[in-house]
Amino acid sequence: MLMKLQLSLSVILLLACGFLYKFTLKSSCLFPHLPPYKSQQGLEALLGHGRSIVFLETSERTELSPLVSCAVESAAKVYAEQPVLLLMKGLNNSMQLPPNSTSPALSLLSAIDNVFLFPLDMKSLFGDTPLFSWYTQINSSAERYWLHVSSDASRLAFIWKYGGVYMDTDVISIRPIPEDNFLAAQTSQFSSNGVFGFLPHHPFLWQCMESFVENYNSDIWGHQGPELMTRILRVWCKLRDFQEVSDLKCLNFSFLHPQRFYPIPYEAWRRYYEAWDTEPSFNDSYALHLWNYMNQEGRAVVRGSNTLVENLYRKHCPKSYRDLLQGPESSVTGERGPGNK
Image (cartoon, rainbow, N blue to C red; front, side, top):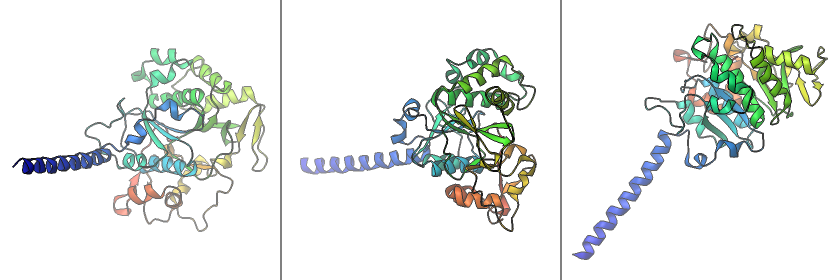
């Protein structure tokens, strides 16, 4: 009788262990943005070498569009040995999604080894920078372009503190950027702030943050972003027009030719959503900015359309293409956000 009881208890124990094991696996599927092996790696530890690729989501949104997923996936593919970070204001400090949230894009991204998702805590981020006093005094509800302005500030503070490369969430990476310290020209003598990179504590970014506060004017779209970068760039450098596809050197950083990120200029953004007889090679480009903020008419990336953007998805973010893109019956547009300029 005792042996039967011991055997029964052993069977129950084994079944319980099996159930707990399966539940653990299931839990990692329910909250895939924080797998166990990633939860032990803090933000500071990942950023120790100043080589991370950084994306920001300054809205409360946790449902990511296929375009955001493609941007992050393509960066993880190109920079396979570097951490790729997506900081989201919508994530809480436990890094769990809201209970009613379902996000296939987050599930997809969190399964990529070198992609890490973290909450975006602006107050903490702005500490020990010129932006802290501005942030603690500003009435964000009265700001016309708050999501964009707060994104402009956050990217400056993050790259100044930790170094690395910042990218907007509508930038598709196609090959590594061979520079540590750089700005990206949108046009000749005008800088973008949609892609830039510096080593930690670069004085250019500190001066940008000081000017951000001293000359603050959020009523003009872009004044705190690309126009700010361009104003400080003109203080540091004597700008001239680009000659062919060659970059400009300015003290200890580079001003990269528009072909590196903007081979299709903003006024021609619709070309990404068209089928080409012969598609461009983009041999002189490191990444492509898709100008999603311009997409006010909601043009979609459609599976089977043979448009340039569909083919970019297929090549540079194949997982997002496979799992997130729909056919013409239920096409998906990229939501316009502060990181989609």
